[in-house]
Amino acid sequence: MSTVADQPLAGRIAVVTGAGRGIGRAIATGYARAGAHVVVASRTPSDLASLVDEITAAGGRATAVPSDITSEPEVERMFAATDALGGLDIVVCNAGGMPSRGPVADSDPDTWRASLELNFFAAYLCARAAIGRLRARGGGKIILVGSGVGHRGTPEFAAYACAKAAQWMLTRVLAQEVQGDAISVNELIPGPVATTIGTGTLRVGTDSPFPTEWAKTPEDVVPLALLLATFPDHGPSAQSFSLMRRDR
Ligand SMILES: NC(=O)c1ccc[n+]([C@@H]2O[C@H](COP(=O)([O-])OP(=O)(O)OC[C@H]3O[C@@H](n4cnc5c(N)ncnc54)[C@H](OP(=O)(O)O)[C@@H]3O)[C@@H](O)[C@H]2O)c1
Image (cartoon, rainbow, N blue to C red):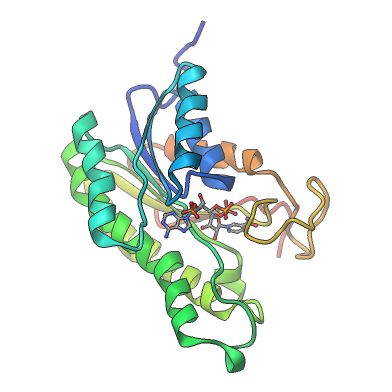
């Protein structure tokens, strides 16, 4: 039998972007298991349909809204789905990717722009659309999935690093703007995870090429995502939480 402790998100409504695969899919599944109704978004409808099937077969609740989150109207449509469900409590701005790799000198401006749009501007659009809805609910959580690359910088990942650094600044500025509304805004840094965005060569459970990091599965990220979603309404906020397990 489920207990309150098993289902800390019972009665909550959460949006998870980039939920079709990888880390977002694991977080959406974990939130649904914890009792939330999850609104899941990505561009590939079949990924979302199979996720909703899995969640509902396990007794959970999920709504798919296929969306390109770099599009403002599509972001608004995604959040309108939460209005139809009665409100919004948690948003996880997770969708991301690496359209641009390689030295700045050889880079293509259009690909750079696409990387900034996906890894930064889309999170801004989602956070912006969420604020009024969270205020209407009396508070909530905004969780932005960042990267250690956005803190330390990594050669040949400049567009991704700049986008994630901007997103980390957005986390801190927005947290101050909404601190009186019982809305917390925090960054979640997963570290290297075996997903399609490029860590396929990592052996899960071992050390990664970055000295402070370890290679993990998407499911390894879920406990931290749950922790951030269940913090008290008054905070912590404006913080970055990483799954690193050694000092820098
Ligand atoms: N994996 C890592 O090692 C790692 C490390 C640090 C940070 N991160 C961050 O973790 C987050 C998730 O990454 P992941 O590794 O799980 O990547 P992933 O397996 O490639 O999944 C990315 C998800 O985002 C969706 N997506 C991509 N572009 C989108 C768009 N324009 N609109 C809506 N959805 C979109 C993808 O679906 P569609 O293509 O169907 O839209 C997919 O569902 C990203 O923000 C990434 O930067 C990952």
